[in-house]
Image 1 (cartoon, helix red, strand yellow):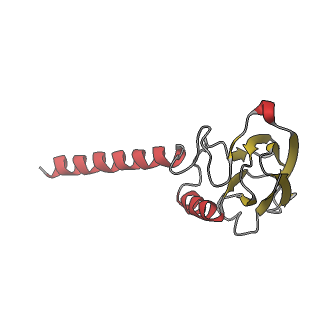
Image 2 (tube, rainbow, N blue to C red):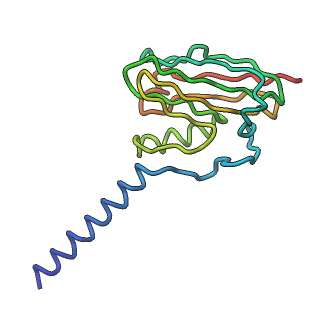
Image 3 (cartoon, rainbow, N blue to C red):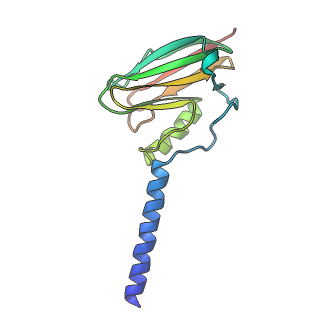
Length: 163
C-alpha cells in the first residue's frame, strides 16, 4: 500500500512539473490583441502600409537607442529591433499597466515565448521586427521585460502625435 501511494505521489508530482514547464515555455495570450484587433496602443500593421522603418538597438547597457520615438496618429511603422548585446532582450509595446502586468509574468516564467504582434524577443547579435499601426494619440510605452532588464532602465516611449 505504501509503495502504491508513493508511486502515485511521484507520478502526480511529475505530471505537475511537466504541466508547469510547458506553461512556462509556451506562449501566453491573455488580454493582448492577436489579429487585426485594435487595442489601447493601436493594432498590428500591414507591411504594405509601413510608411517608414525605425531601427531600435538594444544592448547589455540595458538601454534602447533611441528610447524616445515620434510617430503620427494612424501611421504604420516597421520597427527593426537589433540586439547588439550578449544576452537575450525583447521589445514589448504596451500601456504602462500592460507592461507591468507582463513583467510580473516574466518574473515567474522567464523562458516564455511570445507570439503577440506587439512583442519581439531577439537573441544576441540578431534582429527582429514589429509592424505596428499607431491609431490613437498619446504615449505608447515599450520595454524589455526579461527579468531585471526593466528595473535596470530598459524602457522607452513612442509619442503618437496628431495627424
